[in-house]
Image 1 (cartoon, each protein chain N blue to C red):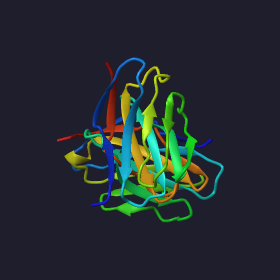
Image 2: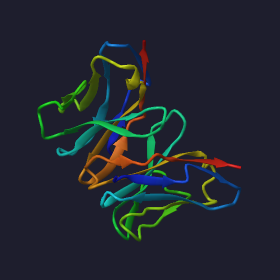
Image 3: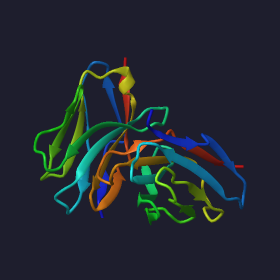
Image 4: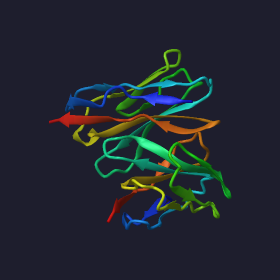
Amino acid sequence: DGGITQSPKYLFRKEGQNVTLSCEQNLNHDAMYWYRQDPGQGLRLIYYSQIVNDFQKGDIAEGYSVSREKKESFPLTVTSAQKNPTAFYLCASSIRTDTPQHFGDGTRLSIL
Amino acid sequence: AQTVTQSQPEMSVQEAETVTLSCTYDTSESDYYLFWYKQPPSRQMILVIRQEAYKQQNATENRFSVNFQKAAKSFSLKISDSQLGDAAMYFCAYSSNNNDMRFGAGTRLTVKP
């Protein structure tokens, strides 16, 4: 079955540590996205990529970094510069930026 | 910048009744797309319905339909014959060829048995 796989489901970060969230899709989609969701709030865009080897900052990119070396993969690194990383992170993909997005099941990141 | 506003943080409906969730948006573009997504307690985001701005006819998917008013920049979701499984957060979203998808803050829908 085609879909988006995010891992891990739960992740804990120590102070000063970088952590990487994985997102893999086998839908052959060109566009991929990372969102952050805080409790009781909507989705805020961190980064998105419309094509391999290209990505754009979203509204809250500070403290995060991404890469898009392969069409199927769009990992998100939460760096130590992100002072409030505790949140639910959702990865999505779509054929183009104007088509419906398919979402992964999310990763919940907490601080130790 | 495009913005999406959902003015109802919470709504409730009696099982089998009809409820309408509101959404307004701001854009200067003429060609764009609007979506409603559902997020149940499992946190998975599920596409409910999609509307292309160039289409005058309102989109319908079984018990879900929209009232798309382009001039008013309004895109409400009507859920008919509400079921307990409809309880979730509902997000309105906007996208276009020139922009990434923008989400509203969401409306939490409670369905009372």
